[in-house]
Image (cartoon, rainbow, N blue to C red; front, side, top):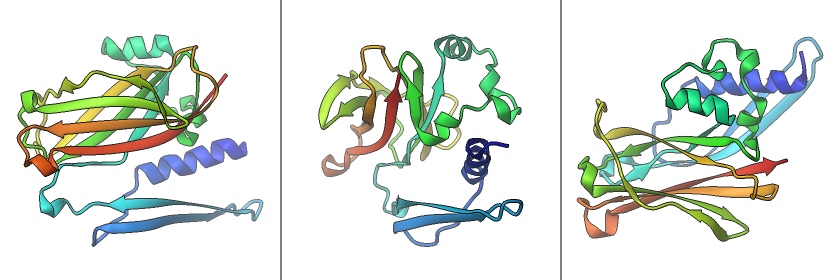
Length: 200
């Protein structure tokens, strides 16, 4: 088993595990593991900001990225099952866990909107792509469709952008901006961002 596959399996387990946190605030999440066969030890850490949802303010969760080839994304858009949606973990791209993606692929982003007032016509979402502090792509704000949502205080949201062949290899930042026209003026906007790398 390769080191990359071992890391993927571990990250996949972490993604599906719940870590209870009693109080909001800034945390450093640390993971350490030991391979019993080789006795090698590895670790990783990441800072996490846990918001206080009890205040009722518009808030975004962290952003989870997924990556698909154009043909796979077309199948998903048509409601067909893609190979990356099967239970066979060998089909999962390790680059998704590492946030390293190829040009010409489709980048899907999933997140949760908390405490929105839930009127679709008043909830606007915008995506922006940055590199070196400069805006490369800026989508038009669009309304959010709440149909099919069972918890209107916890809206599941998803979007996608194509990583065009004109994008140079390097580091990028995806920013999501949500505006709730029904909230108080000073609390109408929430945003979140995630960094990733584009390669040839």
